[in-house]
Image 1 (cartoon, rainbow over the protein chains, first blue to last red):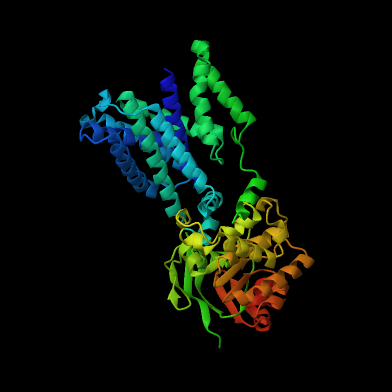
Image 2: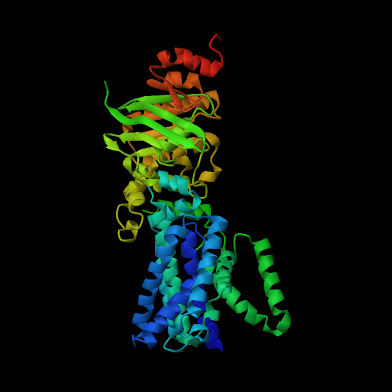
Length: 275
Length: 251
């Protein structure tokens, strides 16, 4: 039971970062549940049907998901705001329905026999991802991403290929979600399309918004709080979803920029001057 | 005659039935400050947007230093050396003043992911950005968020950012709009100070007095067409230019 919480919190931290990476370039994705599914099922096929070890299956599935993400990202990222939300939501529905229609991966009944992932695996991966994102935040690439997010037209006029930057960010986010999905699947033993429904995608975006969208540590904080909070209020039984919802609304009202705020101007200035 | 840096050759741009630019031809010559005048709706901003690749031309050619750039998109024009500012100042408001200039460094705009593999040269980049700010009298504001700058400072930061990419031609879209007389005077000095670092500067304005003192040559536009091109005295005395501004030939 404790192991489950540690595992699912870690998976959700990875998923939150997968959305954060896409948000860095100014796009929002409601398709990360779908990328998680492709990663989970892809790695599952590789381990159960082709006998590959998990350490090979997950990276291959992640690369495949990144390619898929970039191919659909290329046309999808031409849209913005509410339209991009609709497009990525559509992707989430399509992927789930497609998996249900493929007998090879078990259709609606799901896929079984997935083993090998332990909670500590997820946290090692999360640690590495966190470290990489922290290093990224100290490179000029972070500034390029900030510029693309703040004003795409100006970024282009400065010579930045904004489509390329956004597509790479989208593919990276898809790959991260796929890694989370692969680990999740091989912890669960059995997965079915319901595990990767549209609500998963919505929840992950919620983690990020609640944690704070412009701070590397906000998304994992949001993910941890949102994963563990329902357990902490377990005693409320039937009232649980309502209290959970009310807490979310209050948080958004009290801290609209998330639990962790934007990087302070002084911190920004100091970082910018670091040679 | 000086060499042509940028040439518009019969460029047209339509939005539905509206002819925003109609067979517009003019040239920007090496070393000059070219002023572009015209009443509101003359197509001056559309001309900048077509030059910088925000809009694709429907007809005609745009040639930059002998290279046809008509088909290049916005970021390719930026890399080719076409820089610009915006009529309604567009800064990265949540980034610091210094960051606004740093982000325009060609090393990173051209290869955005290159910085993941190299960790050198940062100090030089910062020194170059600070020098750029110094030239626009903004060095003491380097650590402020760009969104907190006063109007005149914001205008100059936009120019500093455009210059940080070491462009060939700089388009300024109504740089003196909203400025008082003293600020305008200072801006003129700043623009003149940076001309030696560029192949040419194109200044779009509807303040004729300002362009008369700043420009080497003038282009007058109306209804998306060229009215006159030449020295300020000739262009501003041109009957069609006079009537476009005063509304009547006899005025």
